Image (cartoon, rainbow, N blue to C red):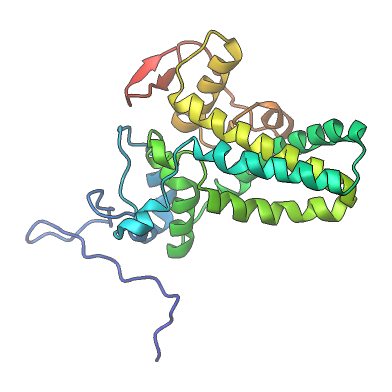
Length: 268
């Protein structure tokens, strides 16, 4: 029988003590992880939600050029996406969008993004997987962030990934809104995304400022990582968690443990 091109790679041999049966497969953290995690099968979900706190992240791929595509500096987000907002506003002007409607429908896009932020995080990034390739894809999309939450270079979305997701999600915009309104809505949603990823980076690595809302967002997100990953899917706000019943059962409060930028844990 011809081999299936999409079949999973053979499982690496498990090292065991002489005379003993090797135990369940465990990923070797000293080697590239992407093509190992699929072998965990049904145990993947438990494994990926047992975080490792360290200043450096794991290696995902062997070749350096592939590894480069998994790493994104935070400043790439505004650098890449602010010009896209400017282009969308330019297209709005060409489409004859009345100036009085630009700001209101920009705000509509911003609100729509908050629902997209919640939905992507809850239903895509936290979709439970058990198969080899689905585990592998999940690890690339979001699992690596939960396993190594303090990996600076795998915290914000790579532009190629968000470009793919945003293109798919934007299709309904162009079907629902008339041409002269769709561009302000699209611009607002992209601005919402920038706020999302900048907030996400800040709650992990930013220097705390004397604003209770910022402290709350940090505690809220750390509770998602370290207490209950099935709750607290909002990053910039907790509104949709309250609407859809995924607000944490235990209110995040001062004194909860959070992770500092140097990888250590302190109370706030």
